Image 1 (cartoon, rainbow, N blue to C red):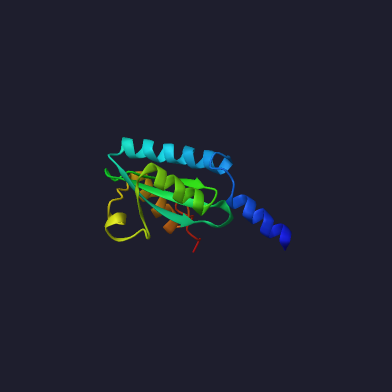
Image 2: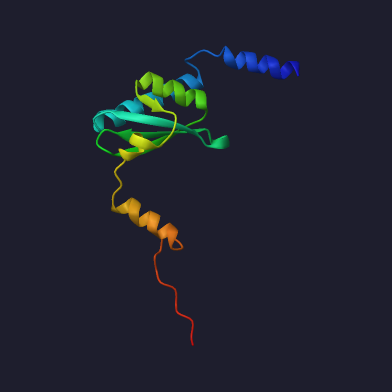
Length: 126
């Protein structure tokens, strides 16, 4: 147990310029770029298991996108560094800002009716 505690303490004391710091800076730059292209941006953080944390971005113009951070702390630090508002949930007025286009509607419909191909299956012989 002592080894684990020591490793945890060392991780907490890691300099901000290490790998996590570089990843935070890169994500923050990507968020700022997205916000600049879409008249500003807001976000929401969603833990996605071992893959990390998803940063969902919604621009003021309704465009949306996402990024994946290796940890929740890196995602939070990146959004703070980028200076965007982060919502607890993806609902209400925030979700209403998202504008979906034909691509998204086609993908959603394809999933609902059995897959992305949207090809009708052959009718059984009577």
